[in-house]
Every structure is written in structure tokens, then in C-alpha cells.
Length: 473
Ligand code: FAD
Image 1 (tube, rainbow, N blue to C red):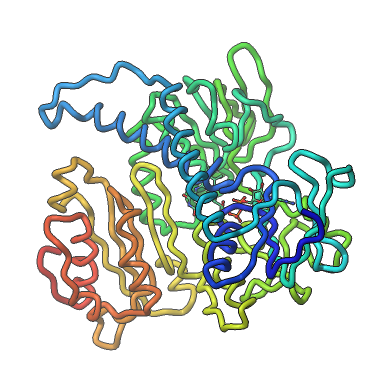
Image 2 (cartoon, rainbow, N blue to C red; image 1 turned 90 degrees about the vertical axis):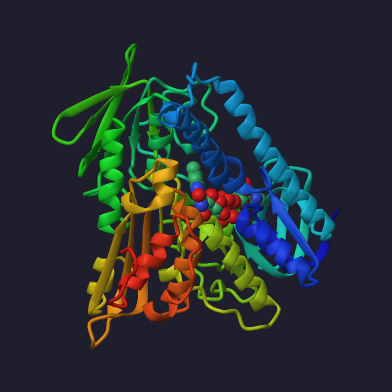
């Protein structure tokens, strides 16, 4: 295939890129999708999916540990990590196969190789597979529109060389050959706490080192407290407000220095300090496309770059690094390419889900953010300890917190934020997300019935309490 022309050429086959390809093809556009590594990108191969799969293994272990409370006499005899890894890979393979099948059914041309944008901003040079740009085997494809969706890669720390067992990022951790007996997780953000939670449930002695004043710093403070308490009960050590300063590797493992001359030693160090945009592969230095000093490609609310005809979406732009944000940016870019009017994404009201134990899920403003924004705030909080279904499943650690605008009569008006921590809250955020984004009021949402007995009843009770009346709340 040389000099083929398409309506849209997309570089990068992660959720943002393949999402744009699927959505564009469903609207009748002729699309080429260039991917240098594996379709599905970070999310399917080394991100959301494998991380959640390993957390599920941890959940099974927890169930077995507590089976006796239900009268079920069961005993875990250990973890066969190779089975865990095979299961994880099997799910990845099925999902990548599914996405590939969908792309092919919609007649998307999948181009294997690294794509770089030419200075004309319409041609993409593809160096096939592992073939380096500039060598033979290159091909040129052109598009009326170009979408850049190169994603992100883990950030690393100078002096912490990454290998496959002792010092790892999320990429290596998700395929680690054996589970460490002890681990230090540097970084207590979403990815770090998920790894900490998973390893602790599977028997690893875990220490989290976090530079910020607390883990999960972007969450509402009341949610953080529940997670911190639960982690402490499960033996996870949290040291926050500390910077790491170096490491030495010896026969006992890796010793990490942190804070004021403190040290901790473990078999494995998981460096989990965030992700950086992976724009350097796109050849943008030879183009007019603006890239900031951190590597993020500049994009407006329609995901247009500063160059007409070139869009950028997903982790490579400076928005929330979430697969579902990438999907929505894909829809925005394609809608704009079609000449229609995309609905701008409300980034301040995105749904966030963190799959540690206990799970965390939220949308909209925290109590503090609402106050800082000048709202007169009313808050409703309810604990899972009184919820029938939570008692039945044996997971009563948790909290529902609704942040609303206070009305003149003292009751809650527009719902500004919904914050959940507890069992299966990642599956319950949906109605909270809708309430926040619809700018619904407490009295409107309180009219809806929550099925009984469910954990989501607590959301209904919390909203109802804002109206000044309640059933059980
Ligand atoms: P990526 O998924 O990074 O894909 C970019 C693709 O572009 C890659 O396949 C890359 O090979 C390709 N590429 C790059 N340059 C070129 C080039 N020049 N030519 C051709 N191809 C190129 N998000 C959630 O929403 N929920 C979660 O639960 C969640 N959990 C996560 C857990 C972990 C451990 C990690 C690491 C991430 C997690 N994320 C989660 C984040 C999520 O994975 C990313 O936000 C998402 O994958 C970003 O999608 P993307 O398409 O922008 O980029």
C-alpha cells in the first residue's frame, strides 16, 4: 500500500485512536489507523484491563479469607501466579481480538508501524512494524484529516532503573513473573493504590510512599479517610508527604531512601508517579503542531490542534488521562471532522473510578472544591454500615457523600458532586454521574426509586436527606 488516501488517518490505536476509527467508520468515513505496537493501546494491554483483572484475583482471595464468616469452610492454598497471568492474558487477547474484528468489519484499514506526521500536515509516513523511520519499507498515506492519538507512557524517576522484577513501572508490574513478598509503591495515585490493594490482598507486605499530603489527593477528603483506615486495617503502610531520594539494590532487595534520612527495603519497587504524553514518536518537531514543554499536544475544546486539519485526542493532550475521556474526545474530534457541532466535554464532571478495596467513585466537585468555587454548600453523608445489602455481602466499610448547593430554605438544590467509597461503587456511580451532569436537584433525584435490597439505596437515602426528609437516613 503506497500513497493511499483516506478521509481520516489516525496515529495510535489505543482507546482514543481506535474509538475515533470505530466512530468515524460508523459515520461512513474511510479511515486508516496506524499502530506501532498493539491495538488496544495502554488500556487493553498494560492498563485498565489487566490491572482490574488482577484486582479480581485479589477479590477472590478476600472472599475465601472471609468464607468462614458465612459458614463456608474453605481455605486458600496459595496463588498459582502462572494461572493468574494466563487468565489475564486470555482476557486481553479476547478484547484485542474483539476490537480488531470490529475495526475490520467497519472496513478500517489497520496499518502496522510507527506513524510520523509530515511537514505538509496531510501525509503520514509509516515505518513498518519494528522498522525504524528513515529505513526502507516506509510507506506514505494521506488523509483529509489527521488525528494524533499517541497516548502516554509511565513516568520514571532518575536513579531508579526499570527492570522486570525489582524496580518496575505498571507496564512490568502487570506481567511480573512472581508476586513479591514485599513491595514499595512509590506514588499513591489511582494506579498506585490499585497495585497496593491488589498485592496486599494476595499476601505482599506493602508500603506506599507518597509525596503529596495524602494518597488519592484529588478525591474528597472523607473518601480518602475511609480508604486510609481500611488500608491500615489490612496492613498497608502509608507514608505521605515524603519524597524519595534514591535506592540501592542488594541481596535483601531494594532499599529506598525517603523523607529525612529514612529507609525501607522490599523485594520490588513499583514506580507509579503518573504518565507522560508519548508525543515524541510523531515527528512533530518538523511540523507546525504546537507541543508544550511537557510533551502535551495543544488542543481546543473540539480537540483541534493549532494546525487546521489536525486533531489530537486521548492521553497525548493535557486532559484527564482516562480511557473513557479518550473515547469521548474521539467522538468530539470525529463529530467536528464531519462538520457537525460536538458537545464540549465537561471535564470538571467526568466520572472517576478507582478499583482498590474499598472501591472509590466520584463525579463533580468535592466539598472543598465547591466551597472554593463560592457555593453555599450542604452535604449529606451516609455510611454503608447501616445498609442491608452491604451487611449481607460482608463489606460495610464505605460512605456516600453528596455535595449540593444550599437553597434559601436550607435544603439541598443542584447536586454538585457525588462521592462514593465502598463495595461495588464503580458500578453505582452511573446515576450520580447523570445527576451531576444533568444539574439535577436533590428533590428531583429523590423521586426516583432505588431497588431494595441494594447498595445503591444509600445513594437514594443520601439524596433524600438533602430535601429535609428521609426514610432510614
Ligand atoms: P494509549 O492507550 O496509550 O494508546 C496509544 C497508542 O498509540 C499505543 O498503542 C501506542 O503504541 C500507539 N502509538 C504511539 N505513538 C505511535 C506512532 N507514532 N505510530 C503508531 N502508533 C503509535 N483509565 C481508565 O479510564 N480507567 C481505568 O481503570 C484505568 N486504569 C489504568 C490502569 C493502569 C495500570 C494504567 C497504566 C492506566 C489506566 N488507565 C485507566 C488509563 C488508560 O489506560 C489511558 O487513559 C488510555 O489508555 C489512554 O488512551 P489513548 O488512546 O490516549 O493512549
